[in-house]
Length: 186
Image 1: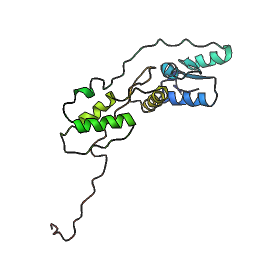
Image 2: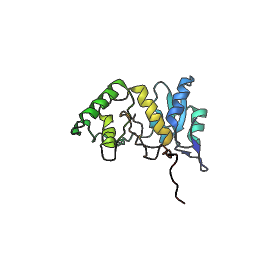
Image 3: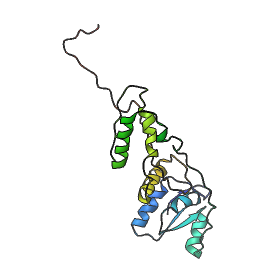
Image 4: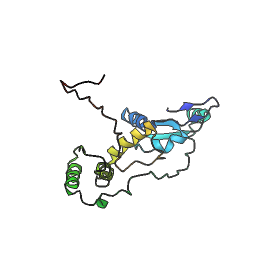
């Protein structure tokens, strides 16, 4: 069972349900009880019965009378993506584009160094448009991470596009440069 029990007896939405259901399946559980609001997320895992419960009464009726609560209706929510940023829109930058293509084809990392305005971020944002879609295992893993962090409300749909994370420019520390035999200001 997964969920947060409210003082009024209702089961509240909780984050990180998808990785918990995956773990339950891996450990051999046949079914799992989740809050109704997490039902569609939990249904992404195949070969495990998911029982939605709106409140503690639903859980008690399930155990005492083997009465399965009704599943909530499915409502699709489109996930925002970077699909409007396409790699083919980049003009020039032939050497950089070739490096990106090699990196994407081989699954390699790429490090971008250059002055502001050179196009590093523009190219990096468009990299996802040339990467292959996520396979089922990768999609489950990516969606699980988003489930735990609550970065997106996906309502029971796997995230199929590879994510793009833009690190802040202050992510690495600037090391002070010490030049010996230089005068210091006083």
